Each structure stands twice: as C-alpha cells, then as structure tokens.
Image (cartoon, rainbow, N blue to C red):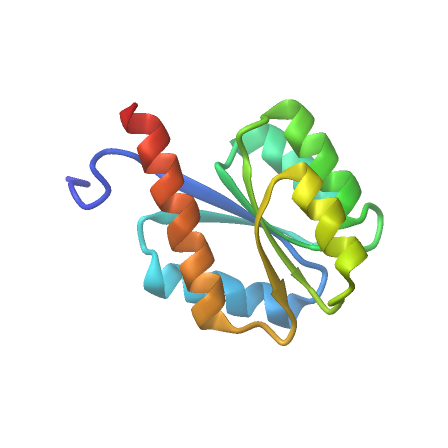
Length: 136
C-alpha cells in the first residue's frame, strides 16, 4: 500500500471561481499527481472553510473571486497554518499583485491562460518542499 509517496499524503486546495479552469486544474493534478488529494472551492470564503476542515499543505488560488478574493483568503489561511504553500493563478501580470503575494509567501505566480507545464513544475516544487519538511 502507498509506497509511492513514502507514506506522506499531500493534499491541495484549488480556489478558482471559473468552473472550466477549476475542472481543468483538478484533472491535470489527478493525472500527473495521483497521490495528491484535491479539494475545490469556487470562492475564497468557501476555500477558507474547506481549509479549516481539510488542512491541505498546498493552495492554488485565483486573485479575483466573488465573496472573498485570493489575497484575503490567503491571509486567513496563513494565519491558520503558516507553512501553507501557495501557487497563484491570475489574469493580472501587474507587479503590484506579485509583490502582495510575495509577502504572503507565494511559491509561484502563473498568468492566465494557464501554462500547465509551469503549473506542474510549481506543484512538484511544493511537494518536494513538503516532503523535505517531513524528513527533517
């Protein structure tokens, strides 16, 4: 059983209000990273509630979402669990957004349309950091 991930189960929360993008990211992860459990939310408020319930190690978040945006949600999540890894996906290439997420501890910043190779590489980096953290 489960020797593939060395007994370390990793979970990931996707916060994205676009159902097509959310489904595409979820499918990519299911295919490329079958050992990662995926939880999805269509806004930041729902994402924070699901984070409290499931405590995933990684979060992929959009910035512009209804109810609560990605900045607010990331801030709340960081206050709950400071070592959460964030990957930001957004239509904004503005440096201001990048700086705000750098302050939170964003590992990768991916501009839409999503480059799935970049996203896969960012997820792999997050997973490697999580495993390294478990082994120290």
